[in-house]
Image (cartoon, rainbow, N blue to C red; front, top):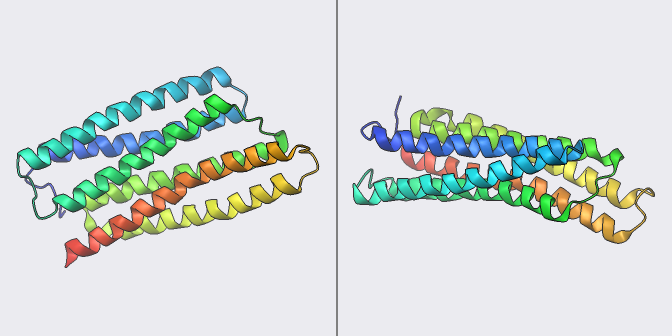
Length: 216
């Protein structure tokens, strides 16, 4: 083990807790959308509230980690990288919350023939976040494993990108959707769901660069 926080166990615990919340945010995102596409609106709203509360708690943990890094002069040689990971992971949590919030506010009507594709897209985005969380843990504990997980993030993002294009073509080619405004609305939500995998990939790429820096 070549842990970055080998001498700062309290900070390691705080970072583990933050990464736990990133992973849980992805899961709530997926389960919430699964409930929405199944018409279980009450359950969906419960997930939306839960994710909002999780995002607020994650912010508090993030601020605590930043405070510890600066006030206790911990890992000064890697502080910038840690802060970069922290802030970008927080962006991932923010996106999961915003997507459910937009669904809750705008309540898009997802045609039955598109629901499976929307659900599959949500699952791919969730899996990209799940692998990002693993890559983040590896960055702080077992550096050599980072690229393994980063490659999986790339895979799921690529699959999400392909499915997003397929879904948008279905939306605009189907005669079952009469109104152009509804086509645009559905496209918007497909892009919102897929954007989570894009952000996960962006963070994973930063992790890969930070990992290279630590090996040098």
